[in-house]
Length: 193
Image (cartoon, rainbow, N blue to C red):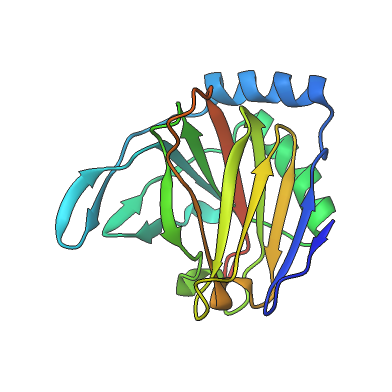
């Protein structure tokens, strides 16, 4: 399903993986990913990131954002298999990935765009979700009233491409509702890889 948003190219596939496959991959990613809780700089102050992360990339490239540089981890067999499926669905090579573990509703990621120079001028981001559904919010950079909420289901893929990162920001907000853990992996293009 393509989302009709101005200045964006976003496709949502709610069932890229079957429910059984999504459950299996969720458990395997939980167990085999080298999760870390990093510290980020926000407005000059250091804070523990409200989620756990791990960075994977071909050619050992590191990733920097919010005053944080992530060390590269070796691709796990599970993650290599997921990447193959996501690359086929996205129609391009995705040599890097940021894995995120949202342990409960208190874990989140604030408004941002995946627009670091290393990703190139029009990055492709293939965001696959496993585990508990969470709300993913999009907001236009210039017209803050222009928003869209999507419930990302386990086994789903959201692909953001073309000028999406230039024109839109996105987040996974905190929620007071009881929600279980969710693993999200954002596979991405990488300049020079």
